[in-house]
Image (tube, rainbow, N blue to C red; front, side):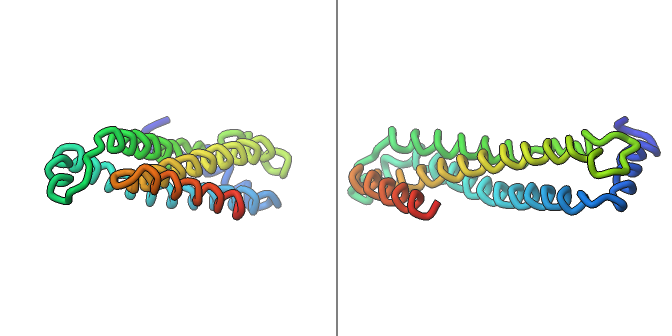
Length: 172
């Protein structure tokens, strides 16, 4: 129910029933994870937005700027960066999307831990999915930043990307 005085009554009943079950701390932990992912994705989305604005300015005025700085103008690199940052932003939006169906898998009369098992499984899946989306978005944004080196030299960009990949393999 979208409107009305009692539109949250079903959820309120489920939340009150949580007080007597041990799995409440597990539910709280998953919601904390999702909140952290939401905050990180919002921050990365902000960075992506700034990058997109800068890249669009360079795409529009880049030839004149490149001539003034005596460097080559690489339209293909700018377009690749825009594509990477755009995909990163899209993945961030998948993380921060509002699809929190609070206690959707919990029966209205739940009073025992096993009544919350399906909800815990759902939250685990959502947390795992959104973690992967964020990780992928972070790598796409980082790759776009590294491509900035390709404005000057493709070799510099390739070496930087290789070093970051090696570092990430070592540090997980």
